[in-house]
Length: 54
Image 1 (cartoon, rainbow, N blue to C red):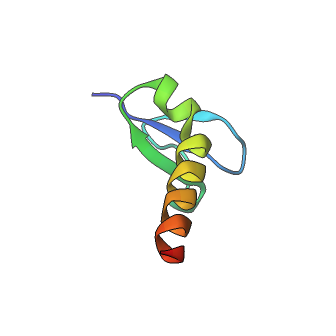
Image 2: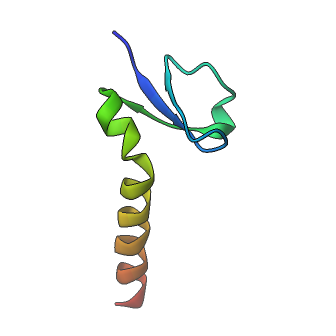
């Protein structure tokens, strides 16, 4: 099964993790999910920050 990764250095989607793991976010089941990786990271960071404030 193909996995998709977001490369934070090149800002490209990779199939089956071709780059070094330190540059990748994932895996994701679909290319579309990987395309929105940075949005998910931002949402999670904001949620964690809100929890820290409580």
